[in-house]
Structure formats: C-alpha cells, structure tokens
Length: 109
Image 1 (cartoon, rainbow, N blue to C red):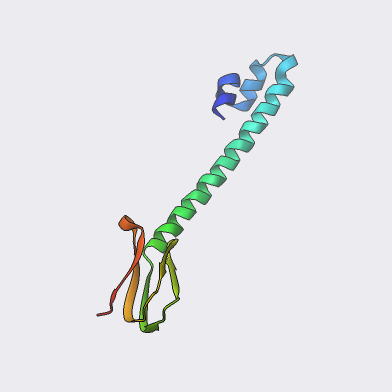
Image 2: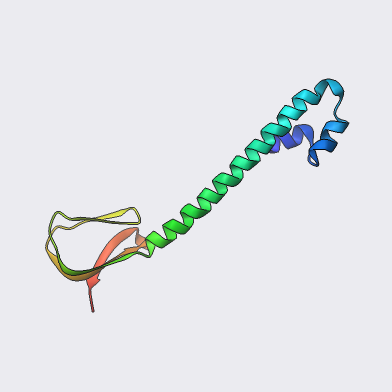
C-alpha cells in the first residue's frame, strides 16, 4: 500500500486518475484497485488479529476446578501450555500463569 501511495500519490481515486496522463490511466486504475483490495484485506486481517487477541486473553484466564481425581497420564492444556499429570491429584484448581507460560495447580479452598 505504501509503495502504491509513493507511486501514484494519496487522495481521492478520481482526482488521481484525472491528473494521470491518458496513456497511464489503465495502469493507475489497476494500481488503485490493487490498493483498495490490499487495504480491505489488511483491515480483515487486523480484525481477525484483534479477535484472536481477545480469545487468547480469555484462554489465559481460564481455570479448571477438579473435585474428583486427575489420574496420571492426563494431559491438561490451557492457553496452549500443557501439563502432564504424573501422579494422582485431587481437589485442585488448575490455572495458566502467563508470566511463566505454564499450567499450575493449587489445592481448592
């Protein structure tokens, strides 16, 4: 988008086309169309990224309360971080700690 802006300038597309020599208008029109498509796609990607950030934040605050027993061999994943249970654990709360990028557990109070 920046490269296209450098080549054809910034402003109203009609004004850009009007000041463009006739022999170059088709090429400039194609550039304007490409710029519009790129800007639209960029906005879509930014919106998707924003949504992913919101979802990641929600996942990082996720907690699991266990009232029964978690048996060895169980794999717990929170926010992409994995905890492999190696011994029986009961009555715990599992949570993700972002600063250490790990899943931890603590007794339920």
